[in-house]
Length: 356
View 1: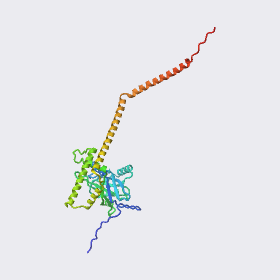
View 2: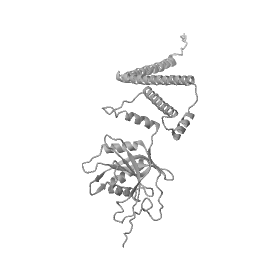
View 3: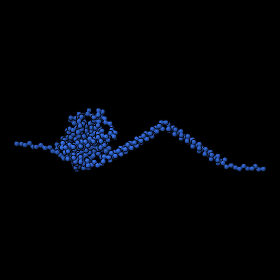
C-alpha cells in the first residue's frame, strides 16, 4: 500500500533577500508610530483618486529612525506613492518613489526608509509583491526587514492599525517575488504632552456638525485639566473602595502602579499649595500686563510714524533744513564782513598838524 508523502511548508531565513558577504539583521521587536504619520495616512486616504484604479486603498512609504541595535523602529514621517491596482496587476510609480525618497532624505538626513503603509487590513499577493519591492537590496530597506503598516479608514468605524514584517516563503523561483509570509510585530502609537493637547482639541470636533473646534484660552484649558484630574481621582477612589468592599477582584499590577504613583506625590499642606498657586497667578497677571503695555507702545509708535509720513513731515523737514542752511550762510557772511571791516578801519590814525 502506497503512502502519500507528507507535505511541508518551508520558511526560509533570513527575513530579506540574501546577498553574498552581507549579513542581514534580525527583525525589530517593537515599532513606534508617531501621530503625524497617522494623520498623513488618513489625509492621503481622504484625498485619494480612484478614477484609474479599482482598489480603494492607497499606499505610501514610511520614514523614520532605528535604534543602534536595530531592535526598535520609530515611524516619524511618510509620503504617498501613486499606484494603480486592478484585479490582474498592480503598478507602482517607481520613479516618483525614488525622487520623493531622495528629497525626503535630503530634508531629514537622520531618517531612513523603514517600509510602506496601506489603508486596508487585507493582505494579498499584491501586498507580498509590494513588500518584496520595499525589502529588496536595490530599492528597499535591506539588510533590515521592511515594515508594513496597515491602517483601517472605514467611515463610521474606529481606526485600527497593525504592523508586520515578512519572511520569504520557500516556493519556486517564478513566484518568489509575489510570495512572502507576513509576521505581526508589536507596535505603539506614542505622543508627547504637547501633541496630546492637540489631539484632544481635534477630537473635540467629532461631535460638532461643522467639524470645527475652537481654540480654548489658557484659563479654560487649566479648568479642563483640573476637571479631568478630579474625574480620574474619583475613578481611582471608586475602584479602591470596590476592592476593599470585595466587590471587584484585586489586581496586583494595578495596585503596584497606584502605590508608585502616590509615592511620587509631594506631601505638602493645602495652605502652602494655595499660597503658591496665588503667587503663580499674580506672576502670570504681571507678565500679561507687561506684554499688553509693550504691545500698546509698539502700536502707538507705529501710528506716530504713519502720521508723520501722512502729514508731509518729509517736506517740512526739507524746508526747515533749507532755512537753517540760509541762516548759517548769512551768519558766516556776516562774520566774514565784520572781520574785514575791523581789519581795515579798526586802527585809527592820529591827525597830522598842517605845516606852516
